[in-house]
Length: 332
Image (cartoon, rainbow, N blue to C red; front, top):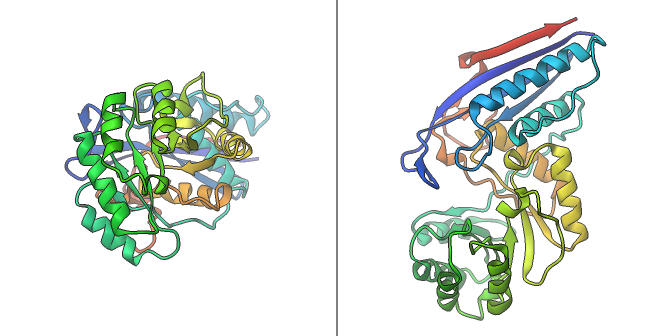
């Protein structure tokens, strides 16, 4: 048996003004992993997200090289197949490569995107007007005054009567600010807020906010905490699964199954992966959450696509021959 593994490094320019928590992100850096077993091939993306991933780029490279070395050696019976990496971005990227290699990741993909409102709500209203089927949009809240966020949400819900609105607060509000937001959303529209992802600084405050306002919430950051368990709770509508931050496909499937058993929606969402990673997430969403629109509208944050391109995008695409090989190994 022949096994070969190659790790490619990429660094792609970001659009100006992309800010993650406390820093401006100028480039999106990560690795593509390519594994080969005899005639079969598989690819995955390892892209830890600064400020959100617990592992650094250097740590992911070391962990990926260690895992791939063991995997190559296992092919000649030198040792048993390696366990999944403990670093979520490495576990996810390698699990995608293995799933492709084994023919387990279906080719069909869900390329629909919930448009992300980052500025003028009129742009989103126009986009929604052209959208077929479910009308779902997402708004990042908590960056400005809560009152402004409430007014923007209200404008969107009023302008598009069939809209289901997803909001993401990243735990940025105090209870007082969250209540200030709710005050500016017409009570008749609140049921059309699909959920707010983690509105308050603690889970208890978020649950309390949902119960008092009738606005549903979703768990996002909480999903990645060791103490988290999926369960039905009053006011909780969904869990957000960001595979790069959560871990392997198996771990994501487990969370999705638990969510559905608890009567919750599971939404597969991006962590600003490249077009390569986004197309794999779209395939994953079509496979594991076919009835839920994924949260993948981050393609335009990066100025270049990578090898596999998103359908109908005119962003230029970087091919594999332009990538730097960080590491390669072959075993027979």
